Image (cartoon, rainbow, N blue to C red; front, side):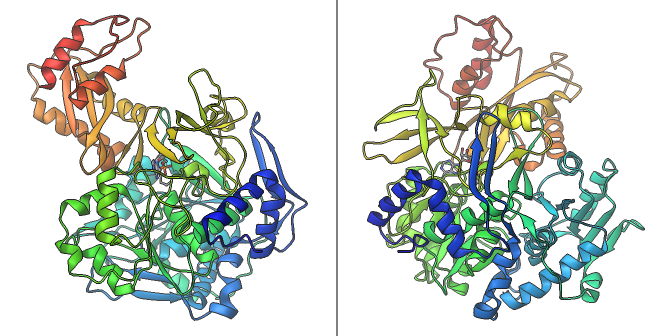
Length: 635
Ligand code: WT7
């Protein structure tokens, strides 16, 4: 029996048991039978969570792009690898075959080499969702350069921080991007960022919106002419299993963004294997994930996982509401999409517009629906199930993280019976644990605690770039010998998991992770601000929105508060990005603090939610009087 494709629940349980009884033997078999290696491993797994150190397939040699592209050339050369659907529905979609993808990746890889990029160098990719983005990622992997994709919605200072943190030698960007009816001036954001990035030698610029832009001599080069000249032959660099494949930044509850480092072999095996089984991908299915490649979802489930399986993967440049709210469904019908993977925030935004948009389109191709990024509320789950899947397409609610590299808790479509708001069961090889407040593992069902993982899995991040201590402190110090996820979860009477949300100071807004501390730090930079505290509050579409309590230095009589609000949000937009703007700002006389000076966020959260009936214990507060005035001001 091949364990690569699990087809029913019974088989899931069988394979799951096998995978946890003898993980090394299990993963060895998967790796051996379904991937292309230049040399096999000497050792499947070695690990020590106390260091922490994890190595999978040590001694193996490979190149992930041979697995994603070259090995399909004989059997699937003319098959479409990537369907590119442009922002503007009147612009023609592109179908890039595996053969064509191979050529384009090789050419791009040669351009990187000609520009002095070598194995191990870091390359920052700051591009919109155009084919060049996927191709740039694969071109880096082809020559062993470490890609660091930065979502093209981040501001220049956020971009600069990420470029500097891992010393990128090159930035790949475009003259601009289309986003619905708007165009964004990406190149000028890069120019601004590079004022503080002395290590960047070259900027490659793809043409997308054909505007006039500033090109810095000896630094900036148009990409297209270089590609035209480049050879279509590029031997893949032979990589060690544990060589870093990419860095991807994620926000933490405090401090600078964390550059999560993913390595080659384990990431490849796990992203491919989860893709196949979670979505039950079968040829010649067309699969569409609406995420941006700037997030981990796009890395694992637009690029690497699908291509490794020889799938056809859709890349969409635009937004769900352009030219109108029918766009997603129009694309599903046009490309006969079979698996559709999106985020709860998008589902809620679409649901709000009513079903008329769906009724105009033939959605009968849809076999599997997926959701990711935040807990999905029951109403959104049912709307998705009833109106998009017509109750015939199972919903896979996939829980995972940038750090985990691949899907961790999830139904397998057609195998696992689904339950609204539940991510259901651990994926093959994943050993979750729920922990109580005293640090003990909760045994049995119907329990609720902090979610940890007890055993390594192939695609886990190996470190934080340049800061292994922070990796240890953040993920391996809360509980001994366990990876701590930062999420809370409950396990129901049959062993299904429901993710209840973050238990740290991370707030998920429209599926994006935002740390409260970096936003507060930014606000506090405003000359009029003394201090601030950010909490989340429930929002109909975004899931959570941000509420800022801000204390001003001068009590504010002379200052125009509307202007101040605008200035503060502008500061946040400039330093972090528009996603982190505050929905509500309240100027306060002070913030409730404990005697040790810690802000009591619990109270602020309650006030933001509009629930002041039971604020809990306020006796430990240094300044209880401030609470009354905040409640008054919130009205
Ligand atoms: C956090 C990770 C991994 C892809 C996108 C987000 C939350 C993610 C779910 C889900 C409930 C979820 C968690 C997690 N989350 N998926 N299906 N149900 N919560 O990656 O930006 O690293 O965020 O997103 O809180 O810790 P990320």
